Length: 71
Figure 1 (cartoon, rainbow, N blue to C red):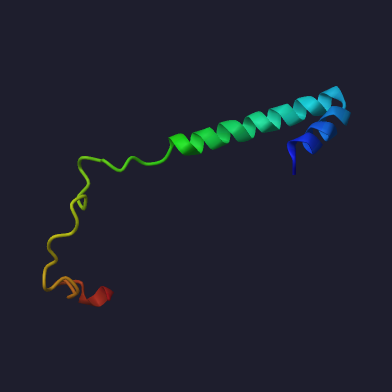
Figure 2 (figure 1 turned 120 degrees about the vertical axis):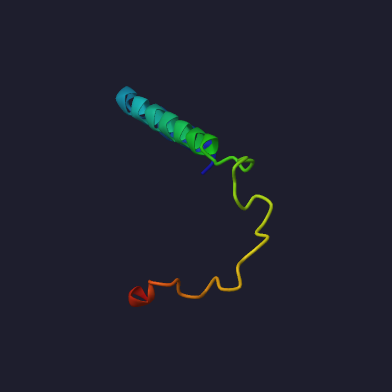
């Protein structure tokens, strides 16, 4: 929807409704900025797999001793 059409519709609204529109736009703006700021950082120094997985034991898929009843 072109901005000019939105502006025309906005201008026809009563003052109270214009305030609601402004509040909603502000809400959308702040929510959008929050989600951009909350993205996880990739350079976490204690990440166990940061350099890739180097070793998996040969018996990785075997059932651990004492857990046979649970599988």
